[in-house]
Length: 150
Ligand code: SF4
Ligand code: SF4
Image (cartoon, rainbow, N blue to C red; front, side, top):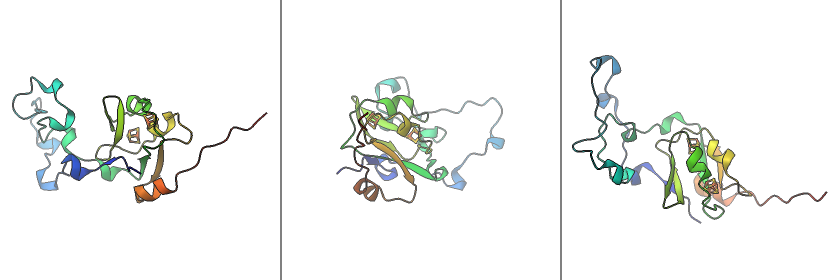
């Protein structure tokens, strides 16, 4: 069973240390902070992980520590409807060629919207405590709910 996790190490994203952070009170008013290093004219044709992000781009910093609950993704049930990708307010659902690949845990803030909009029975995304091991969550995934006959 796949965990559907793309973690920090795989994405190459680092948590900025305090010494690397730029304090907003130190930035000159009106200054332009480049989102990308070097030429960015073809940026639209590159996949997110291939882009040359600058340290000022939010993509290069993780907000994983803000979260106390997280979505866990179950590939075995997912029907690739893309609802979660459309509704995630933090662009933290990773999808390629209309196939759901997993959660970007570096930028997911644990709001639970993706779980709410997932239409499968049982859901293919469920919220768990941040401390929960994903494989354990997947091993105890709920079964399909039967509809009551009227
Ligand atoms: S919990 Fe919220 S931020 Fe995280 S993937 Fe789901 S919708 Fe996006
Ligand atoms: S909403 Fe649920 S079924 Fe649809 S792509 Fe996302 S995880 Fe898969």
